[in-house]
Image (cartoon, rainbow, N blue to C red; front, side, top):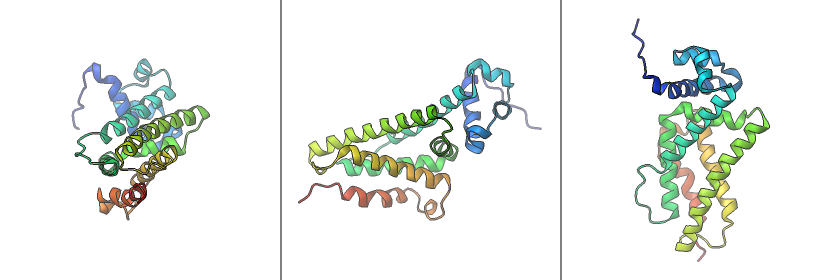
Length: 203
């Protein structure tokens, strides 16, 4: 039997979160038990409660970890972008690449949106989505000032459309859609380019 690798105690909290990501991704919030998570982490259930007083608190920590990782990845290793369209396309390609490499995290996103069991969860998720829309809207305002986007755009509305495109891609990747996966990162551009072209200034 393979020898169990012991992590330093300072990493115990992260060890629990990593195990919970897999458990929640596989069984959703309601289906995953603290016993499942403790078993996956190689610790006792009592040890989890030293770090997280409830399953809900652990779930919030997992959700924050996942959404934080997705947002951080969007801005990592971006090429030089001449305008908003190039930047949005590059962000979507990063998003696609991250999703392919982290399927458990995508399933967490799908689960938290589609199976938010309480109004508290729903409001929390809505707040996270609103933050993403505000970030995109700020980028669009900069694009309008640079003259690369139509000044008549309703930036608030369009920013939410872009957020929805991002999450549509998350859903498709999470469910491993056959028409999408073989295209790789190019699938992101196929989705984005026609929409972005419609945002250009009118002649």
